[in-house]
Length: 143
Length: 113
Image (cartoon, rainbow over all chains, first blue to last red; front, side):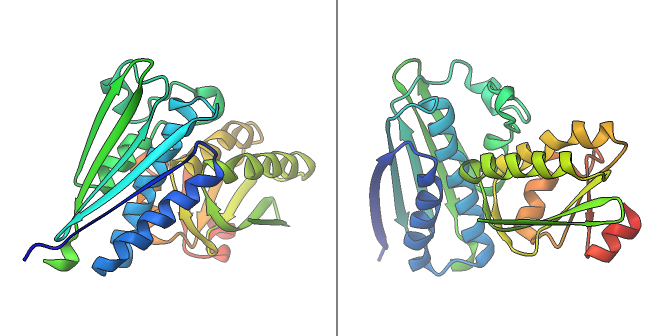
């Protein structure tokens, strides 16, 4: 039989919540008994997506970030959504080293890290209405 | 978050305990700028022994120091980086482009930087 579970958290777009978000997902995913490496990869990807929502989505203004995590057997699916300004050019945003905010000393590596650490990364964004990043990872430790 | 530093010959050795993300970056950047300005050293060497998490925000802070270190003819180094954080460094091309030099230990870093 297929194992399924899911969780949903919403929190304010404060930088203190970046650690909260990645630890919450790590704690939820730990029921699958992943390797240290897998947990670390998931935490890093979540941290990147949540940081993007706070810095770029809401541009440091207050807003709500919605985080969901679904488990289906050994497949973990995570979404991070904001109702912020949206991304004008998704393709450009995903390019390594591209940043729309160089004055903040951002490395422009956020999406590259998400793509390297997760199996799939999908980005949906509507200008002035928000962005959703959906990431999937199949845990090899359970195969 | 705990930040301490010391000087060994012409290098500032920076030891950070905790996690490096966007939230902790401002604090680290401010401390680094101040300490590098007040010490007459060339290089900055980061001790990663007690850093258990770093995302690409950390890459931004380290890259951001390259200009000032370069102006003094110095280099940026890291040692004792765990495998996950090492991958973030590799992805960002900082090793390949010789912006950051990676070492196994403090002694190796001081001798070879």
